[in-house]
Amino acid sequence: MRDAPPAGAPMIEFAAVTTLFGRRPQRALERFRAGADKAALLAEGHVLALADLSLTIAPGEFFAVMGLSGSGKSTLIRHVNRLIDPTAGCIRVDGIEVSALDRRGLEAFRRRRVAMVFQHFGLLPHRTVLENAAYGLEVRGEPRAEREARAAAWLERVGLAGYERHMPQALSGGMRQRVGLARALAVETPVLLMDEPFSALDPLTRAELQDELAALHRGHGRTVLFVTHDLDEAARLADRIAILRDGAVVQVGAPADILERPADEHVRAFVGAVRRDRPQPPSSPFASPSAG
Amino acid sequence: MVVYGDGFQAVSDSLLVVLVAIEQALRAVPPVVFVAAVAALAFAAGRSLRLAAAMAAVCWFVGALGLWDQAMQTVAIVLVSVAISVLVGLPLGVLAAKRATVRAGLAPLLDLMQTIPSFVYLIPAAMLFGLGKVPAILATVVYATPPLVRLTDLGIRQVDAAATEAARAFGASPRQLLWGVELPLALPAIMQGVNQTVMMALGMVVIASMIGARGVGETVLLGLQRGDAGQGFVGGLGIVLLAVAFDRITQAWGRRLQAGRGG
Ligand SMILES: Nc1ncnc2c1ncn2[C@@H]1O[C@H](COP(=O)(O)OP(=O)(O)OP(=O)(O)O)[C@@H](O)[C@H]1O
Ligand SMILES: [Mg+2]
Image (tube, rainbow over all chains, first blue to last red):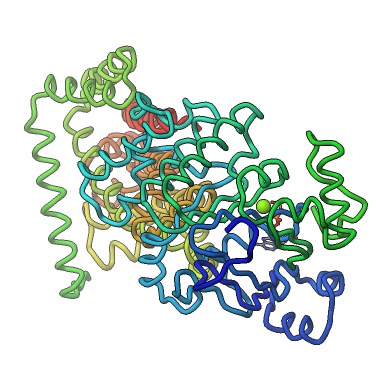
C-alpha cells in the first residue's frame, strides 16, 4: 500500500470541497466559481480555506497533510468530524455522508467513527487523567466501571499507569498529550484525526510518541489523518503525504515521491526549506501573502 | 386597597410557606448549634480553621448585639431570595451565553434592574403582593439577580474553546457539553455571581423592612425614625457582620473551586 494510490472503497473521501470563512460564504462561493482567487476574496472579506479540494484516503492508511501555516490543514481535518461545515462539496467517511447527518446522527458518528487528538491537547481541566481518558466512552453512555477499566488500560498502554488520579495541569506537555492519545484510542474508532499532535512537545518526547504511535498503528490498522509541519515526522509515519497550498492539494504521494520528485517549485521549495534548516518551521519565499 | 389576583395569591402563599418554615427552623435552632453549623460550613468552604473561628465569632457578636432573632429573619429572607435569584439567573445567564439575541435583549433589562432605585419597584411589588415579606423578597430578587446573570454568561463564554471543541469532537450532546464542560468550568465565575447576589440581597434588608419585612433592617429603620443614632448603629453593624459572614464563606468556596481547577 505504500506506493500505489489506494484502490477499493475509500475510508475518507473529500469531493470538490470548498470552504470559505466570512459573513456571506455562499456569495463568496459564486465569486470563487467565477474565478476570483484567494487574494481577491480576501479583499472582499472572505478567507478561502479550502479550494475545490478532492482527496481519498484508504482504509488503514496513515495519511499525513503538510503545508505552510494558513494553508488549510486544520480546516481540512475538522471537516472529517464536521467541526467545520464545508461551503460546497461533500465529505464521506466509511460510506457515510458527513455533511448530510442531522444533529443526533452527527453525535452518533462522532462517538463511534472518529476520534481526535489536538495540538494543544484539549483536555478537560476539571477532570482527572482517568476521567479525561474515559471521556469519549462516557459521552456515549458506557457504564462507569467499564469505561474506567478501558481508559486505565489505554493509559497504561501510553505509559501513564499510576497517574490516573492526577489532574492534567500537574502533568508535563508530553504526558498531557499521552492522555489525549489515550482518550482518542480508548473509543476504538476506525478513524483517528490528529492535528499537529506532537508539535508542542520537545524533540525527544516527540520522537518517543512517534514511535509509540507507529507501533499502535501497526497493531490496530486504523485510518489515521495526521497534520504536521515536520517533514521527517511525516516521512517516518505516513504511507502517503499531501502537500496543501492555499486550500488546494498540490501534490499527493508516498514520502519518497514527494522528496525525490516534487511536483512543482512550491513543493520543491517547501521540501528544500524543511531540509535545509530543520529546526525552523517551514518558511519560504513562496509563502502566500495571506499565510500566517 | 390591595386586590390579589389568584395567581399572585398562589405565588405569594407558597413563597410565604417556604420562608416561614425556614425562619421558624432558624429561630428554633439553639444559637450555639447555629454558630457551630456556620463554623462547620466555613471550614467546609475554605478548609481553614481560622476562617471557621472568625465566622463563629462574627455570629456570636451578632447575638451579643441583641439581634439574634432579627438576624435569623434576615438570613431566612436572604436565603430564599438568593435561591430564587439562582433559579432564575442561572438559566438566563446560560441562555444569554448561547444566544446573542437573548444577550442583546437582556442587557438593557439588567441595566434597568440594577439602576432603578429600589423604591420605584417596591411600590408595584407592594401593590401586587401587599405589604410584608413576599414583596420584600421579590424586590430583593429583582435587585440581586443581574450580577449572577452577567457572570454566568461571561463565565460560560470564557470557557476555553479547546475544551469545548474536544467535547464536541467526541460527540457530546449540547446537554453533555453544558453540564459536563461549560458549567463546571464556569463555576468560579458563577460563584462570584452568587457572592455578589448575596451581598446585594443583604443590601436590600433595610429597604425591605420599609414594606414590612421583619429582620435586622427594622432596627436600622427604627433608629432612623426615632433619630436614635445608637440603635441605627447597632442595626447597621449587625448587617455588616452578616455581610462579612456571607461574603467570606462564599468567597472561600469560590476560591477553592478555582484552585481545584488550577487556572
Ligand atoms: N473560524 C475561522 N474564521 C475565519 N478564518 C478562519 C477560521 N479558521 C481558519 N481560518 C483561516 O483559514 C485559513 C486556513 O486556516 P487553517 O487553520 O486551516 O490553517 P493551517 O494550515 O492549519 O495553519 P497552521 O499551520 O498555522 O495551523 C487561514 O487563513 C485562517 O486564517
Ligand atoms: Mg493548524
